[in-house]
Length: 440
Ligand code: SF4
Image (tube, rainbow, N blue to C red):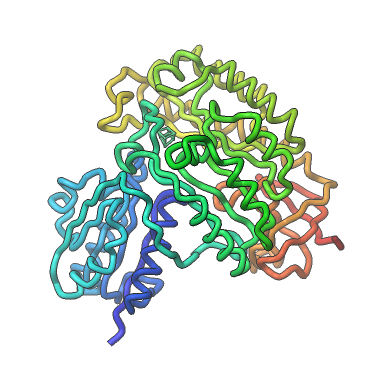
């Protein structure tokens, strides 16, 4: 009889790669993925536990499944990912409906967990979260024609507000040959855009090769036939050297879009948060990047209400954003995470942090609108993603848009999803661009 499961993948792209690996392992073991948990033999929730909002989302998802299980519409619940790692001692006491739990170092045991719950047994596994990265194949669930390429796991930066190093363990690079083999395989299956991810990609290679090796990796990725775009996510601001900047500027396949989370600009806050580098160094870096990489679009993430952020420090952040005109930004109110040094430090109240986040989002929305308007009249290369029934238009992304977090380009034309189109932009609205396909 068919053994079925549903997969709920929460949180970031790095977690999604683990979900894709579990999909591979389960399907190889004869389990069949179904779209809905209702009626399945079991459901896997791959959780995020990074900040409060993510924890609540994960707990809500588990409680919803628990309700299905109570009504006998679901056989069992397996929980994996950051929430299970972080609350390994209490998760099954708090949520007794859970049948099996795997920590982040044990997601490769998903088939054992599935076999156990199918036999009515419970199972818990928490291997080291700092062991070398498991080289497990995956079923790519993104696309068409784009996929994440994870190059490392864990983080050694220990920013004072962040729980990730405690959850995901020390920084471990994947061997370059394994990454390249995976990239070649993705390209052979039609992937045109590789989105290079890790908690911090600038540190890539320091543990394995004794030196920063992101530029060398990008050079090799750029040689792979079929790969047209390489997008770089999460570059730590103090880790740019000339070699990396030159590679980004000269490698035609690297899209001129960089995601550099700066978190704040005030020196005292950066220092208290154990961030390396000063506000002046961040300003200088952004100036250098814009000078040396024409057409560069920048993305960052920011936290409002960090310990030490009074009105003056917040004003400094806003003034910086007006001057730096960073095209894309994610803004989060400070979440005091248990076990992190920042949680013990006095900080603005949550309402103030939230209000400031909203003010920054308004400010950034204006900057983004101006950027979008500046694209009108230009011809952009767009990776066509889909046909949008509602508008009757094709929809895709330009170099300036990373999936799920940035805008989209809607256009008239005949380009099949998964292919590249040249699109003449004739309108912009609410972060979206509109245009018509033209001959390349
Ligand atoms: S670089 Fe800092 S914010 Fe990013 S994952 Fe590492 S510790 Fe967290």
